Length: 209
Image 1: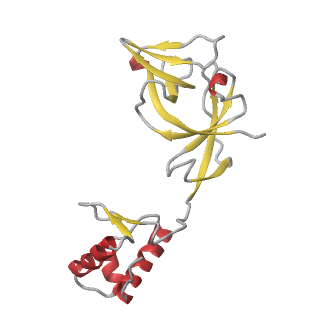
Image 2: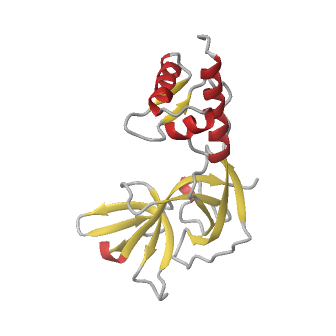
Image 3: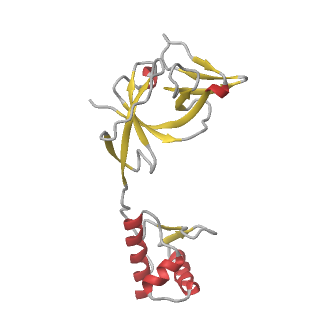
């Protein structure tokens, strides 16, 4: 590990504190303001040195393109997300999602992201993917999906005026969308592309044992 000057150590400490407080890295201007450095070019010089010494990584053409390396932060802070449980989702026939603002889970950044939400599963149509009745699925909002991904799909052709949601594997085939259950006893849902909207992808599964 290469030795840092006092100024470089101060800048590195500020970057670490800023990321901890704001969940994003500071800009060169913010670093300069905190360090009493008027020139952003002077700040850039110190950041270049920190990068060459292996303490940070820099992304070009990005104002907040700084990342601490394991040299600077051997035990990176794990972020914890407050993930709301926004209702129920059918792993069988579609049912409406129901919001309950008081229901939420705390998850680390290995299992969730900034805008993730969770849904409670009802039914066993995804049982062969190990998604069972009563489980929680963590969902990353998305409007598109790749074939084979487990998605939350909004069906506009259902009986509800607001549409209905279901949990299935997504397949786009010729002139239709196939929403495939993971249960050999159940049939897929076949819909026209205009009658279905992807609302999110399942990124984690939570089960009480």
